[in-house]
Length: 85
Image (cartoon, rainbow, N blue to C red; front, side):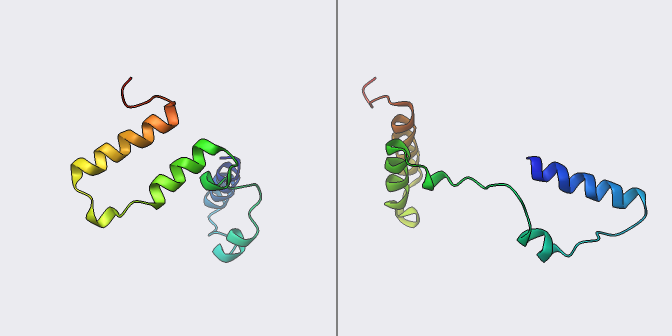
């Protein structure tokens, strides 16, 4: 979010001055600061279990009902509630 604010300020400043973007997009991409958090790099057993559930899915062969049930299973893992609650 912080980086987006910086880019927005640059774009607004360039727009007010009648300029185009002064930096090449490749330059912006390679010089960005900050961190992009990855959902799957966190060392949390719950997130690991969710990752394993998602990676184990064959989404091309799921029926809509199976997909909804699987989503409910994943929600239960995240909230810590069992299916019978």
